[in-house]
Length: 249
Image (cartoon, rainbow, N blue to C red; front, side):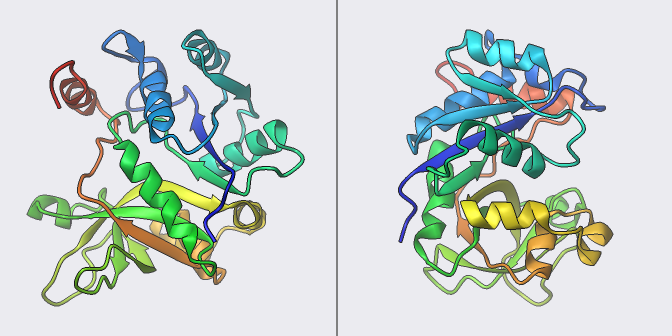
C-alpha cells in the first residue's frame, strides 16, 4: 500500500568545495535551496522540511515561508542529516515515508518526485529512486554519471535495481540509465539504513545506495523522461538559471 503520510526533507549545507555557498546562490531572485523547496512544494505530496547544517540556509528558507531545522554539521551523509531532521519534527512517527530531495536539484520535475514516491506502492519495496535513459555517449562513459543497472521490460516504468555503478553497465546492446539521486524511503527502511555500517561496494564505488543493496534491501527505480541539472559547477548554475528563466525551460 502506498504510504499515506509522506514527508519531504531536503538536506543542505554550505561546505561545498567546487561551488562555495552553493545553496544560497541566486537563481532568478531567490537562493537555490528555495528553488528546490519550491519544487518539493509543487509535487504536493505532503509537508516539506529543509534539514540545514548552517544558519544562513535556515534563514533563507524561513524568509521564503518554508520550514527549516538545524542539524549536526558533522553528519557524514545527507541520509544521516535527514534522519535527524525526521526525528526532530516527527518523533511520534506519524510520517510513514520520507522523500530525500537533494538541495542541488533546482530543476527537478515535481512529477518525478511523485514518481519516486509511487514506487512504494509495492509492499516489498524499501526504497524508491529515479533513472532516465542516457542519450549522450559522453555521459554513458562518464564516471561522474552514475548508472542504475535495471532490467526494464518493454512498457515498464518501474523495475527493481540490481546495482548502481560508475562504469558503463550492463554490457550488450540496449539502453543505459542515468541514476537521479532522489530517494523515497519507508520510514523503517531509512532508520535501518542509517544504522547500517558502510558497505564494501559502497566504499569502493563511493555510492551510498550500495549500502542498502548489500544489506539485502530492495530498491525500485521509476523511469522518468528528464534528467535534472545537478548544480556542482558555475556552468551547471548557468544552465539551471536558463532552464528556470521565466517563460523558458
